[in-house]
Image (cartoon, rainbow, N blue to C red; front, side, top):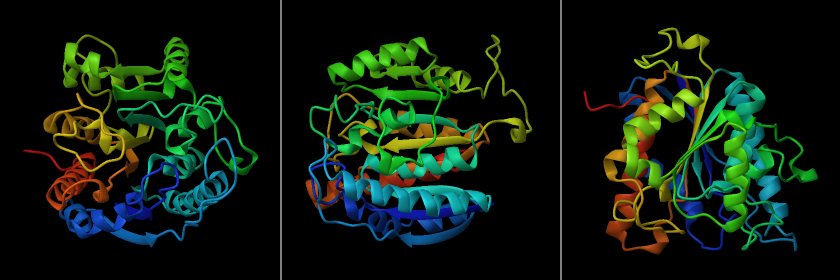
Length: 312
Protein backbone atom coordinates (compact mmCIF):
# COMPACT_ATOMS: atom_id res chain seq x y z
CA UNK A 1 0.00 0.00 0.00
CA UNK A 2 1.13 3.54 -0.72
CA UNK A 3 1.11 6.71 1.35
CA UNK A 4 1.09 10.08 -0.37
CA UNK A 5 2.74 12.73 1.79
CA UNK A 6 1.63 16.29 1.05
CA UNK A 7 3.24 19.30 2.71
CA UNK A 8 0.67 22.02 3.35
CA UNK A 9 2.50 24.71 5.26
CA UNK A 10 -0.49 27.03 5.53
CA UNK A 11 -0.02 29.38 8.47
CA UNK A 12 -2.43 32.20 7.67
CA UNK A 13 -5.26 30.35 9.48
CA UNK A 14 -3.78 31.61 12.75
CA UNK A 15 -1.69 34.60 13.85
CA UNK A 16 1.74 33.16 14.68
CA UNK A 17 4.55 32.72 12.17
CA UNK A 18 6.37 29.38 12.12
CA UNK A 19 3.60 26.84 11.53
CA UNK A 20 4.43 26.87 7.82
CA UNK A 21 7.71 25.08 8.45
CA UNK A 22 5.90 22.08 9.94
CA UNK A 23 6.08 19.84 6.86
CA UNK A 24 9.87 20.13 6.51
CA UNK A 25 10.44 19.65 10.24
CA UNK A 26 8.37 16.46 10.22
CA UNK A 27 10.27 15.16 7.20
CA UNK A 28 13.66 15.95 8.71
CA UNK A 29 12.67 14.03 11.86
CA UNK A 30 12.60 10.83 9.80
CA UNK A 31 8.92 10.45 8.96
CA UNK A 32 9.51 8.76 5.63
CA UNK A 33 11.86 6.10 7.02
CA UNK A 34 9.52 5.42 9.91
CA UNK A 35 6.64 4.76 7.51
CA UNK A 36 8.82 2.69 5.18
CA UNK A 37 9.77 0.52 8.17
CA UNK A 38 6.03 -0.19 8.58
CA UNK A 39 6.04 -1.57 4.99
CA UNK A 40 4.36 1.41 3.35
CA UNK A 41 5.51 2.68 -0.01
CA UNK A 42 5.97 6.40 0.56
CA UNK A 43 5.46 8.89 -2.23
CA UNK A 44 6.38 12.40 -1.13
CA UNK A 45 4.54 14.95 -3.25
CA UNK A 46 6.53 17.84 -1.80
CA UNK A 47 5.12 21.10 -0.48
CA UNK A 48 2.23 23.02 -2.00
CA UNK A 49 3.09 26.46 -3.34
CA UNK A 50 0.91 28.51 -1.02
CA UNK A 51 0.29 32.22 -1.33
CA UNK A 52 1.89 33.62 1.82
CA UNK A 53 0.62 37.15 1.37
CA UNK A 54 -2.07 38.17 3.80
CA UNK A 55 -5.07 39.43 1.87
CA UNK A 56 -8.59 40.77 2.09
CA UNK A 57 -10.79 42.02 4.88
CA UNK A 58 -12.93 38.93 5.23
CA UNK A 59 -14.58 37.90 8.47
CA UNK A 60 -12.30 34.91 7.94
CA UNK A 61 -8.86 36.51 8.15
CA UNK A 62 -6.80 36.05 4.96
CA UNK A 63 -9.81 34.34 3.42
CA UNK A 64 -8.58 34.67 -0.16
CA UNK A 65 -5.25 32.95 0.49
CA UNK A 66 -6.87 30.30 2.71
CA UNK A 67 -9.46 29.42 0.07
CA UNK A 68 -6.91 29.27 -2.76
CA UNK A 69 -4.55 27.13 -0.71
CA UNK A 70 -7.39 24.83 0.32
CA UNK A 71 -8.36 24.29 -3.32
CA UNK A 72 -4.76 23.43 -4.25
CA UNK A 73 -4.54 20.89 -1.43
CA UNK A 74 -7.98 19.50 -2.30
CA UNK A 75 -6.97 18.87 -5.91
CA UNK A 76 -3.66 17.23 -5.06
CA UNK A 77 -5.10 15.07 -2.28
CA UNK A 78 -8.07 14.08 -4.44
CA UNK A 79 -5.76 12.79 -7.17
CA UNK A 80 -3.83 10.73 -4.62
CA UNK A 81 -7.07 9.27 -3.20
CA UNK A 82 -8.25 8.39 -6.71
CA UNK A 83 -5.03 6.42 -7.16
CA UNK A 84 -5.97 4.45 -4.04
CA UNK A 85 -3.35 5.99 -1.78
CA UNK A 86 -3.56 6.83 1.90
CA UNK A 87 -3.07 10.60 2.10
CA UNK A 88 -1.05 12.15 4.93
CA UNK A 89 -1.22 15.95 5.05
CA UNK A 90 1.56 17.67 6.95
CA UNK A 91 0.44 21.07 8.27
CA UNK A 92 0.47 23.92 8.65
CA UNK A 93 -2.40 25.04 10.79
CA UNK A 94 -5.74 23.22 11.09
CA UNK A 95 -7.31 25.23 8.26
CA UNK A 96 -5.57 22.71 5.96
CA UNK A 97 -8.45 20.32 6.74
CA UNK A 98 -10.61 22.47 4.44
CA UNK A 99 -8.64 20.91 1.58
CA UNK A 100 -7.58 17.52 2.93
CA UNK A 101 -10.94 16.46 4.35
CA UNK A 102 -12.76 17.72 1.26
CA UNK A 103 -10.61 15.39 -0.83
CA UNK A 104 -11.28 12.43 1.49
CA UNK A 105 -15.05 12.96 1.32
CA UNK A 106 -15.10 13.65 -2.43
CA UNK A 107 -13.09 10.51 -3.22
CA UNK A 108 -14.66 8.30 -0.56
CA UNK A 109 -18.09 9.67 0.41
CA UNK A 110 -18.53 7.13 3.24
CA UNK A 111 -15.51 8.56 5.08
CA UNK A 112 -15.75 8.95 8.88
CA UNK A 113 -13.81 11.65 10.73
CA UNK A 114 -12.04 11.46 14.07
CA UNK A 115 -11.04 14.97 15.19
CA UNK A 116 -8.43 14.87 17.95
CA UNK A 117 -7.93 18.41 19.19
CA UNK A 118 -8.10 20.68 22.24
CA UNK A 119 -10.44 22.86 20.16
CA UNK A 120 -13.65 22.05 18.29
CA UNK A 121 -12.72 24.11 15.19
CA UNK A 122 -16.39 24.65 14.51
CA UNK A 123 -16.78 28.42 14.71
CA UNK A 124 -18.31 30.09 11.69
CA UNK A 125 -16.74 33.26 10.30
CA UNK A 126 -19.63 35.07 12.04
CA UNK A 127 -19.30 33.36 15.44
CA UNK A 128 -15.49 33.36 15.63
CA UNK A 129 -14.09 35.79 18.22
CA UNK A 130 -10.73 35.94 16.39
CA UNK A 131 -11.54 35.44 12.70
CA UNK A 132 -8.78 32.82 12.51
CA UNK A 133 -9.59 30.14 9.94
CA UNK A 134 -7.95 27.31 11.91
CA UNK A 135 -10.90 27.50 14.32
CA UNK A 136 -13.50 27.12 11.56
CA UNK A 137 -12.95 24.19 9.19
CA UNK A 138 -15.67 21.87 10.47
CA UNK A 139 -18.38 24.53 10.26
CA UNK A 140 -18.11 24.39 6.46
CA UNK A 141 -18.42 20.58 6.31
CA UNK A 142 -21.46 20.57 8.58
CA UNK A 143 -23.26 23.25 6.58
CA UNK A 144 -23.08 25.86 9.35
CA UNK A 145 -20.97 28.16 7.16
CA UNK A 146 -20.45 28.53 3.44
CA UNK A 147 -18.18 30.48 1.14
CA UNK A 148 -18.45 30.54 -2.65
CA UNK A 149 -14.65 30.21 -2.84
CA UNK A 150 -14.94 26.87 -1.02
CA UNK A 151 -17.63 25.39 -3.28
CA UNK A 152 -15.72 22.09 -3.47
CA UNK A 153 -16.38 21.23 0.21
CA UNK A 154 -18.70 18.21 0.58
CA UNK A 155 -21.17 17.83 3.42
CA UNK A 156 -20.38 15.62 6.40
CA UNK A 157 -23.22 14.07 8.38
CA UNK A 158 -22.92 14.86 12.11
CA UNK A 159 -23.02 11.17 13.05
CA UNK A 160 -19.92 10.58 10.93
CA UNK A 161 -17.82 12.91 13.11
CA UNK A 162 -16.28 12.07 16.49
CA UNK A 163 -14.31 14.42 18.72
CA UNK A 164 -11.67 13.37 21.26
CA UNK A 165 -9.65 15.61 23.59
CA UNK A 166 -11.65 18.85 23.63
CA UNK A 167 -10.92 21.27 26.45
CA UNK A 168 -10.98 24.85 25.17
CA UNK A 169 -14.34 25.91 23.71
CA UNK A 170 -15.86 29.27 22.79
CA UNK A 171 -19.45 29.97 23.91
CA UNK A 172 -20.79 29.66 20.35
CA UNK A 173 -18.97 26.34 19.93
CA UNK A 174 -20.59 24.96 23.08
CA UNK A 175 -24.01 25.71 21.63
CA UNK A 176 -23.10 24.17 18.28
CA UNK A 177 -21.64 21.05 19.92
CA UNK A 178 -24.76 20.47 22.01
CA UNK A 179 -26.84 20.60 18.84
CA UNK A 180 -24.44 18.24 17.03
CA UNK A 181 -24.53 15.73 19.89
CA UNK A 182 -28.29 15.60 19.48
CA UNK A 183 -27.67 14.74 15.81
CA UNK A 184 -25.28 11.90 16.59
CA UNK A 185 -21.83 13.48 16.80
CA UNK A 186 -19.69 11.75 19.42
CA UNK A 187 -18.08 14.37 21.67
CA UNK A 188 -15.46 13.42 24.27
CA UNK A 189 -13.92 16.32 26.13
CA UNK A 190 -11.04 15.77 28.55
CA UNK A 191 -13.73 15.33 31.21
CA UNK A 192 -14.80 12.06 29.55
CA UNK A 193 -11.17 10.97 29.13
CA UNK A 194 -10.68 11.56 32.87
CA UNK A 195 -13.84 9.71 33.83
CA UNK A 196 -13.74 6.68 31.54
CA UNK A 197 -10.14 6.42 30.38
CA UNK A 198 -8.89 6.72 26.83
CA UNK A 199 -9.59 3.04 26.03
CA UNK A 200 -13.32 3.34 26.61
CA UNK A 201 -13.49 6.79 24.99
CA UNK A 202 -11.85 5.53 21.80
CA UNK A 203 -14.03 2.43 21.76
CA UNK A 204 -17.12 4.63 22.07
CA UNK A 205 -15.85 7.07 19.43
CA UNK A 206 -15.09 4.34 16.90
CA UNK A 207 -18.32 2.49 17.68
CA UNK A 208 -20.28 5.66 16.99
CA UNK A 209 -18.49 5.93 13.63
CA UNK A 210 -19.43 2.35 12.73
CA UNK A 211 -16.20 0.42 13.31
CA UNK A 212 -17.36 -1.80 16.17
CA UNK A 213 -20.74 -3.30 16.88
CA UNK A 214 -22.16 -1.92 20.09
CA UNK A 215 -22.73 -5.33 21.67
CA UNK A 216 -21.37 -5.87 25.16
CA UNK A 217 -18.37 -7.90 24.05
CA UNK A 218 -17.84 -5.48 21.13
CA UNK A 219 -15.08 -7.17 19.18
CA UNK A 220 -13.99 -6.07 15.74
CA UNK A 221 -17.07 -6.14 13.53
CA UNK A 222 -15.31 -7.92 10.75
CA UNK A 223 -11.88 -8.95 9.72
CA UNK A 224 -12.65 -7.72 6.20
CA UNK A 225 -11.93 -4.04 6.61
CA UNK A 226 -13.10 -3.76 2.99
CA UNK A 227 -16.63 -3.51 4.34
CA UNK A 228 -15.66 -0.74 6.76
CA UNK A 229 -15.96 2.94 5.91
CA UNK A 230 -12.68 4.82 5.39
CA UNK A 231 -11.34 6.78 8.37
CA UNK A 232 -9.83 10.27 8.25
CA UNK A 233 -7.91 11.14 11.42
CA UNK A 234 -7.35 14.87 11.83
CA UNK A 235 -4.81 15.30 14.62
CA UNK A 236 -3.95 18.67 16.13
CA UNK A 237 -0.78 18.40 18.20
CA UNK A 238 -2.37 20.73 20.77
CA UNK A 239 -4.65 17.86 21.81
CA UNK A 240 -1.58 16.63 23.67
CA UNK A 241 -0.66 18.22 26.98
CA UNK A 242 1.92 21.02 26.56
CA UNK A 243 4.23 19.08 28.88
CA UNK A 244 4.76 16.74 25.90
CA UNK A 245 3.91 19.04 22.97
CA UNK A 246 4.99 22.55 23.95
CA UNK A 247 5.74 23.84 20.43
CA UNK A 248 2.26 24.83 19.26
CA UNK A 249 0.34 28.08 19.01
CA UNK A 250 -2.69 27.58 21.26
CA UNK A 251 -1.36 25.82 24.32
CA UNK A 252 -3.95 24.59 26.84
CA UNK A 253 -3.02 22.68 29.98
CA UNK A 254 -4.76 19.43 30.89
CA UNK A 255 -4.39 17.60 27.61
CA UNK A 256 -3.71 14.01 26.56
CA UNK A 257 -0.72 12.29 28.13
CA UNK A 258 2.04 10.88 25.94
CA UNK A 259 0.46 7.41 26.05
CA UNK A 260 -3.13 8.61 25.64
CA UNK A 261 -2.06 10.57 22.55
CA UNK A 262 -0.52 7.44 21.05
CA UNK A 263 -3.50 5.30 22.02
CA UNK A 264 -5.82 7.54 19.98
CA UNK A 265 -3.63 6.92 16.93
CA UNK A 266 -3.19 3.19 17.63
CA UNK A 267 -6.95 2.68 18.04
CA UNK A 268 -7.52 4.34 14.65
CA UNK A 269 -4.89 2.08 13.08
CA UNK A 270 -6.56 -1.02 14.56
CA UNK A 271 -9.75 -0.35 12.58
CA UNK A 272 -7.81 -1.29 9.45
CA UNK A 273 -9.66 1.56 7.75
CA UNK A 274 -7.25 4.50 7.86
CA UNK A 275 -7.41 6.37 4.56
CA UNK A 276 -6.14 9.83 5.49
CA UNK A 277 -4.48 11.76 8.28
CA UNK A 278 -3.66 15.37 9.02
CA UNK A 279 -0.99 16.31 11.54
CA UNK A 280 -1.16 20.03 12.25
CA UNK A 281 -0.16 23.03 14.37
CA UNK A 282 3.47 22.15 15.11
CA UNK A 283 5.30 25.48 15.48
CA UNK A 284 8.97 25.26 16.43
CA UNK A 285 9.35 29.06 16.63
CA UNK A 286 7.48 29.25 19.92
CA UNK A 287 9.78 27.31 22.26
CA UNK A 288 13.37 26.36 22.89
CA UNK A 289 15.00 24.13 20.23
CA UNK A 290 14.81 21.17 22.66
CA UNK A 291 11.08 21.61 23.28
CA UNK A 292 10.50 22.09 19.57
CA UNK A 293 12.36 18.88 18.77
CA UNK A 294 10.34 16.99 21.38
CA UNK A 295 7.10 18.22 19.78
CA UNK A 296 8.23 17.36 16.25
CA UNK A 297 9.32 13.86 17.29
CA UNK A 298 6.00 13.30 19.04
CA UNK A 299 4.11 14.39 15.91
CA UNK A 300 6.08 11.96 13.73
CA UNK A 301 5.53 9.19 16.25
CA UNK A 302 1.76 9.84 16.24
CA UNK A 303 1.64 9.55 12.45
CA UNK A 304 3.56 6.26 12.65
CA UNK A 305 1.18 4.92 15.32
CA UNK A 306 -1.87 5.84 13.24
CA UNK A 307 -0.35 3.97 10.30
CA UNK A 308 0.44 0.76 12.10
CA UNK A 309 3.33 1.23 14.53
CA UNK A 310 2.60 -0.59 17.77
CA UNK A 311 4.42 -1.62 20.92
CA UNK A 312 4.15 -5.35 20.23
